[in-house]
Image (cartoon, rainbow, N blue to C red):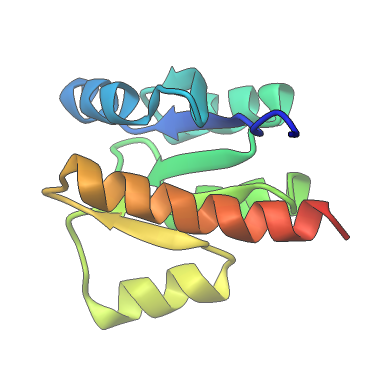
Amino acid sequence: MPEPVVLSVFIIDDNETTRAILRMIIQGENYHVIGEANNGISGLARARRLRPDIVCLDIEMPDSNGLDILIEIKQTLPNTAVLMVTGNNDRATIVTAIQRGASGFILKPFNSGVVLDTLNKAAAFLKSHLKK
């Protein structure tokens, strides 16, 4: 029986509490949190260096717009799934994020079931593309 694939996750969010909650929910037998950043600029640099399978990316941060960071991540790491973390679920934001390559959304306030379900959907997509 093959070993289960553990996917690496990187968290970019300016809110320390949000990062801590996401880390506690995500870290487990299927996912390993390999790092985090409290702003988009340093998060982008670290994600490029660490090359995670999945990035959880806040949309609204003081130093940068997550939608712009999304473009940069997808250009540099096209095989990385990016999950947008946001309290803003207006249609224009969602459409823009999808057009720019977002793989899914974690809407605030969130719970562990929603976060893990979103991660599992992204993981299933990644695993199906890794086999090809």
